[in-house]
Image (tube, rainbow, N blue to C red; front, side):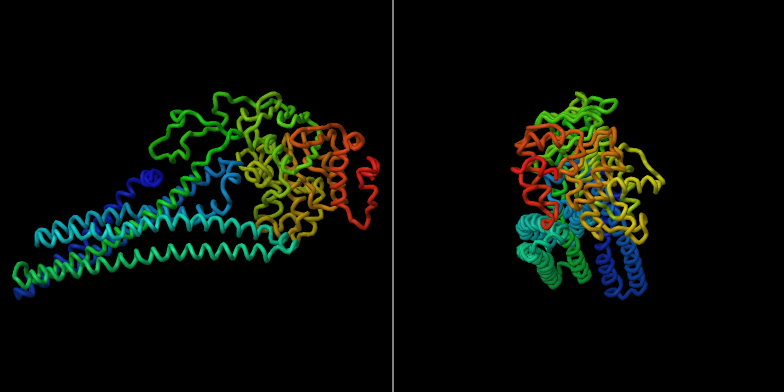
Length: 629
């Protein structure tokens, strides 16, 4: 509710204008019954034509005024809802980019998609309460006062009847809130599963798993359908009660008014007015009950938004400070967490990054990466390689030092501008091949998520912008990644548009484009995760040779077990059980580390054509020379 109140405070004058129009429109609905009653009593019953014409003209003018008020009310409320939706989306987007690597570890993609596509709209719709909702309450009070002037008994019926209606509907609204929450959670989970299936459809087809995953999705869809029926059942009861009970209430009041007219307590004109007042009163009641439903749905949606906003960057990206250090203006976005988080540059313990190239040291594994060297790391467990990349790239809290300075103490912008972690399956946005390759230089300095901004998904490098993106330079990057053939095979070359994730390219082609993008970013420290896992051995050999030349004099870390890549590294480290157990050149480790020899032999066996293999050459017991061959 604080988040919703913030949305109201962001546009106070517009909300006041909407409330004024909504109130005037609601109260104006009660004016016409009064005018009709005067036309009946003063014109028809009295036989006064002039009075009848006057009151009829007043009814027409009132109708025109009500139409204008209705238009302005709807127009203003539309502006209020759209402003709230856009403002919520902006706050959410800024927070998502600030979360960085935390987001994919804490929340599924489908949950984020559901919040962005559905919950923002439901929260914005809740602001309708500020217009017709306020007007309905005031109109209810005004009609009760007017009815009191006609008959205190009728006014008492109205004053007591509406709370009774609310008491009947409230349990249904509470039940709807529980059903809606469960439905939204399952919807987010199913959206995540659908995205995973679409992203891995080609792989599923290759392993024969499409049927299995399709059946699981169908089962989840059926469960969601059942939950949707629960929500629909409660909602239908609310809709029925919202229309039916006010109708019964209207009938009871009119019956009572007719009895009073027959006994002479009120006039016929007053009976007409009473009917009009009570009939009009169904509109505020309908709005109030509808607002109750919007309140429940909006609270559920706003709760999901706030839950996402409560996620905070971990110690790798920011550190909590005292709340007084992050005071905000009245109309500022609500603080997403109980402990505000500020960028590392403003932390008391912030340290400047090394002035030039410096060694990276990871105390968790014992790895030291000398500045300006090409270092390979062969990990027996791929998960350990990913964890090491996260620590060296500052995507998780760790004790990594950079030139003796704790990496977590360096402002994040400096880390992102100079250290780039390139996943082998990082995201490729839609655009021309030229745009994709240029992206490596344009978004480098912005903080972002693992596999997102700051990595090679949309950016990396030193923060400089290459406006013209000279073709010669782009093609040099493609050549270093052995991807010239990708551009040559496309109909328009570098200007060929590629869809989301570049699915029109093969897996190996996409991987080489990602590598070219990372190389074109020209970061001071480049960390490559299995950059050649989807290419053939001949292409991999070319990449290994060209990569060393392209990164000469700059720190490069290769995480993988390919002997073709490791053979070109200045130093290779063998990572096993979370620690570096051996270091040396590739040849030295082949001779002296049996575990390393078995590890790279297994990788070589996976890459080569079985028909061309001499099994003895890839048997670790055959010795280092067999593995080299």
